[in-house]
Length: 134
Image: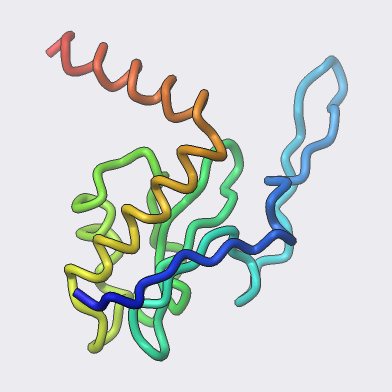
């Protein structure tokens, strides 16, 4: 594995998805302008490719910065790192290794968990109930 994997944090996107109070007390979420600078967490896995974490409504999605084959391929940070990699791998390109990509996903998951601990706990609780029900 590359020893230089580093997590970057984009402070410009630390506040999450823009929200407005809707009629009757509901919440309206607005998709912000999405472009190459729309990321909260980023880990470069090659010279041209990074794994990113970004606000996606009530969670943080994880995917590749450059999506060449399948646009909008990402999963919430609360999933298994290997499963996230399997889902997004078509967009990784030739250079990044599986090992580096999974390590980058885990780095983003740890940062996202620190930012959204209550959300992560609710998802874990829900998943454990679902496994118990089967």
